[in-house]
Image 1 (cartoon, rainbow, N blue to C red):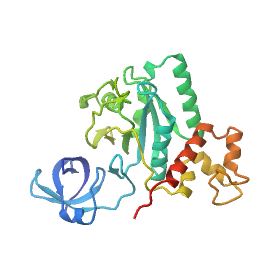
Image 2: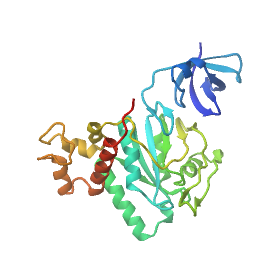
Image 3: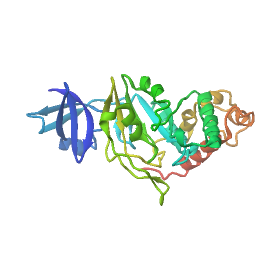
Image 4: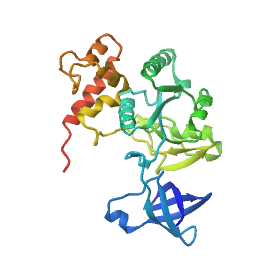
Length: 293
């Protein structure tokens, strides 16, 4: 039977790309029975008599998957955050980074709307960008309006499946429109009442950009750490993972343990205070999480 990649999921249909042809498929009932949900990015086996009437027979093993947005086999997560409108949020960025690190997906931080910043805002964003670069993350400062910085993004998407992720209104669709103008993706302004973007992307779809594929995903503004255990959280903060090797106790959680190398690094400003505080808050959230049965 033929094989292909799911590039779009919408209204119960899965659109499978096979030899340059899009086949509209449904999932077999066995998937519902076994609680398997095909995801965009899945490599699948299917059968079809024509381009409109196919069935997915098998989902190949995934190398990773995300729940929100629902996508599989991602090589890279492009975390899109605006400098302003909505304001840049380190706590939300760190939530995204924790999830991405936990799923062993390479992150790229892309800060948009730099053209809208005043001098003080621009200075603050540049300082944050330096903090994250010092950790080891790549950070791009861009503007879809002026197209500044966009040329730095293009090489990163070649030959990869990338997911654009970020809260609503940060300019994900605008970035994609610059990368591929023929898309003409719908964009909306920030809601003045809610202070956040209106949702313009309603489903997950892989879009070809050069030799790469990018998933434009529905915007969202919260993430839950449903699968991460307390002792795993350190390893989702690369700078803390490095320092933790020097902690006195192997199972150190960097809260109240003696001779904690991570806390010492915070005191010496080798780890930023806000990143450590986010770690503490996330750890408490994980500890208070209701057990799953």
